[in-house]
Length: 214
Image 1 (tube, rainbow, N blue to C red):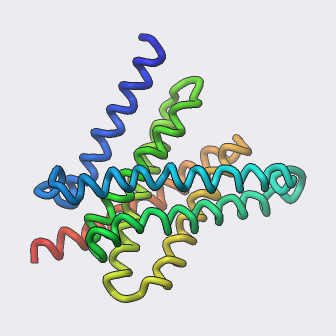
Image 2 (cartoon, rainbow, N blue to C red):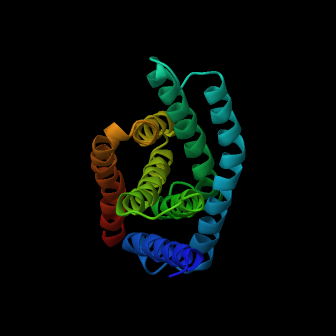
C-alpha cells in the first residue's frame, strides 16, 4: 500500500477514535453545533501553540540545555513549556463557549490532541505499533486534562487547577521527550504515559456521566 494512503488511513482512524472517546462523554451532543465548533477551535489552538512552543523549544536546544550530562534540566524545561502553554490554550475555546462544562472541555482537548497526533504523523518515516499507541494516548490525555480543568473552573478554582493540570501535563511531556531522546528509556516511558492517561481520562468521564444521569 502506498505510504500516503497509509498515512490517510491512520489519520482517519485517529479521527474516528477521537469522536468515539467524545461519544463516551455525551453521544447526544456529539455532532451538535457548539461541541463540533469547539472541537474545530481546539484544533486551531494547537496551531497557535505550535507557532510559539516550537521556536522556544528549539532555542533551548540551541543553548545546549538538552545535551551533555545535565540533559535532564533541558528536558524539564521543554516539558514545563509544553505543559503550561498547551493547557492555557486548550481551555480558551471551552471557556468561551460553555464555561465549566467538562464535555465542552473534552471537545476542545479532543480537537487539540487530534491535530497534535496528525503533526506527529507527518514526519514519521514508518509506522510502528508503539508510535500509534502513543498517538492514541496523547489524544485521550489531552481530552481528560481539559475536562478536568473545566471542572476546576466550575468549582471556582481556576488558578489551582491550571497549575495542577499543567504540572501533570509537564510530567507527561517529560517522559515522552525523554523516551525520544534516550531510546533505552522507551519502555519505561510508555508504561508511565499509559498509567497517567487512564486515570486522567476516566476520572472526568465518570464524573460527567454520573452528573448527567443524576
